[in-house]
Every structure is written in structure tokens, then in C-alpha cells.
Image (cartoon, rainbow, N blue to C red):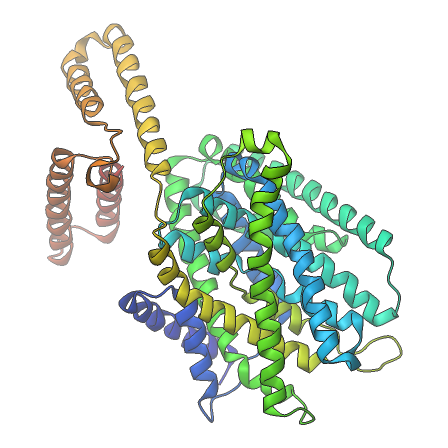
Length: 528
């Protein structure tokens, strides 16, 4: 079976498992991973190896860029303190705790490889945490903190991994050198990312060709990653910085056509990447088990897997509560600026620590040998323990997180809906004000202007801030919903008629696509 055939088959598996995930009501990363695990256990199937270079170059940049593009810099700034405590403090704490546990249980592998495993399993997966959090309707603050953490924690973990691997290879480690390296790598990554983001924005502002603009946006994460990694600074922070900058400028430099086209292209791209990655995670089990030497029994391996997985979970839970409340007890400024979250919300953040593709790729990227040509100590065991942590957190915590959320009574706080209504009010007010000035500019089109003014005045009447009624399911009232249904029925009838004309040979494909695009845009406007 060729590589192309393998990829096509895996894409079919992704499609099938997505349907299964929606039917079961289970987050798709979990179903994809379990599905890949089941496939990997079927005898006779060819083994599919996930090359680390593919993950770090082809998978991680677009995922991080897309998440950063959609992330609000304002929310990132608002929650900078808790995000930093999780993405930097917790990552380092997990690295140390796991290193201590592994060295205590398997002292023969040495300190540096033990801490390398800690760095590998310390960062939660960006895709798993945010996809599950968004799907479950958590409060916006919780989602923002989880998303912000996932954008930065990979950088901390990969820098820590680089330092521990270097220590394992050379046998030397300096704390001062490590701290200086961390600062240099972080600042350098951000600087390169901002420079690339600025260049991308200038290109998008000058172009007037939606497909080319979308292509530029697809190339942007790689343009930020490659030069950063080439000069040995953080490619993660470079991509995140570029994504934040481009996302901020997109409403001004992209046309509506580009945004509509780009949204579909990016949505499909990220879906395919995520699906393939999570299936491939499950498929790695035969390769990982095959690399293990026979000098450890199944019971010993199980004990090690449970110990490391529990350490990862317990350290996060033990960190989030003092990390949330201790600064408020010590600082009046923090108490004034930030309202204290409920213990239930803190527990959700603590439980949403699913590991994923970055951890597996980092483990598989461990060098085979150290200086002098000796094998890297315990490499096969570290790879197995990484897979065990991923499986435990992604499947175990991922499946129980919805149950925990329902049991704690945590739900959407409606903040996004309130902001949406404010945005609508501002847009309607601007439209009515502009229509007043258009009376004099277009005196022969008074009828159209009056119709538009009546439409926007009607919208003003029906904008509602009362989210207590009907559990704030929608900012629209019943009349608005009925109007939308009427508009949708008309659009559907037009679409059926045009397709029928094409089928009977009265019009060609190009005419169909042009009219269909107008109908699609009208449908999108109606949904807005």
C-alpha cells in the first residue's frame, strides 16, 4: 500500500469516525484516538508511523495559527496572569514532579531523561481542550483561559525538553544558562512572529484576489515557524504572535469574499489535520509496543503508566486551586481587578488537561543516541509512558469532563451573547445615522432609504438584553425567528429552481455557480 493510498484510507476513517462521534455525542478527538487504537490492534494491517518532523512542521503551525487568529488579544491580556501560571508555572511544575516520580521508580535511566519525560507530557493539547470546552458551553472566562494556556504552554514545554535532552546528551546542566536560554528563545520567537505577521498584513492589504489571499493565510504559519526554528528560537510563540496580529487586522485588510472563502478553507484544513492526527495517535500503539524491550513485565509497565498518569493529573489539580486563590489572598490589586472564580470553575480548568499530539511527537523526536554513540537512556520506555498519559488524559478525562460539568452545574454565562447584542446595536445605530445623511445625497431614492430605515428601526426594537428569559438561548425573539424561516424558505426555493434549470440544460455550470454564490451570501446575511 502506497503512502497516498494510506492517507486516502485514513481520510475515509476520519469521515466515518466523525459521524460516529456526532451520533454518540462524544468529542471527536476521543473517538478518533480510540478508533485509531482499535485499527492499530487489528492483525495484518500495515503499521503507520507518525514522523515527528511532520507534526512539528506540517501539523502544529496551522493548528496554532488558526487558534491564535480566532483568539481575542483583549481576552488574552485580561487573563494573562492565570494563563502564565498555567502555561509556564504549571508546565515547569509538572516537568519537575514527573521527573522526580520517574527517577524514583526507574533510577537507572538518570535524571535528565526523567525530566525530559516530564517536559514531554506537561503541555495539554490545544485541540482537545478547546474543542471540548467550546462544545460543552463553558463560561467564556474558562474557555479563554484554556485556549490561552494551549497557545503558550507548548513553547514552555519544548524549551524545557530541549534543555533536558541537551543535558542527557552532554551530562551537563546549568540553571542560569537554562533561564537565559528560555528568555532568549521566547523573546526571539515573539519578535519573528510579529515581523512575519506585519508582512502578511501588508500583503493582504495590497492583494485583491480572494484565492491568493487565502493561500497567503495558509502559508503564514509556516512562514512564521520555519525562520524561528532555523535560528533556534520558539517556533510556537512565533506562530502564535503572527496569528494574533493577523487575526486582529483581518477585518480591515480582508474583503468579505476573502473572509467567507477563508473561513471555509481553514475550517476544512484544520478538521482534516486534527482528524488525521488523532487517528494516527491511536495507530502508534503497535509501533510503541514493538519498541519496548522484554526486560520489563506487563505489571511493571502498568504500574509505571498509572504512576506517571496520576502524577500529571494530580499536579494540575493541586496547582490550579492555590494558583487561583493564593494571589487574591496576598494581593489587594488582584482582588480588585479580577473577580474570584467559583471552585467549580477552577475544578473544570484542573480537569481539562488532556494531552495529545505535541507530547507524542516530542517523545518520538527524542534522539536515538547521546554523545559517544550510546543509546538514549530509556527512550522506548519514555515513548510508552507518553502514550499512556495521552490515552489516560484524553480518553479518561475527556469522557468524564462533560459529566463533571453537568454535575457541577457549570454553564455558559451569556457574555458572548451580550457582546453580540451590543455589536448589533452599534451597527444598527450607525446604519440609521448614515441613512439620515443619504436623504440629501440620493433624493431620487427616498423610497429605498425609507424602507431601509424602517428595517433598521425594526431591528432596534427587537434587540433584547434580557437573557434570563428562555435561558438566553438566542438574541432573537420569536418574530425574528419566523422572519428568518421565511427568508430561508425563499432562498431554498430559488436554489431548487436554479439547480433544476441546470439539470434540464437551460443554464450552464458557471451561471449556476454565480447565482448559487449570491444565494449563499444572502443566506449568510440572513443568519447574521
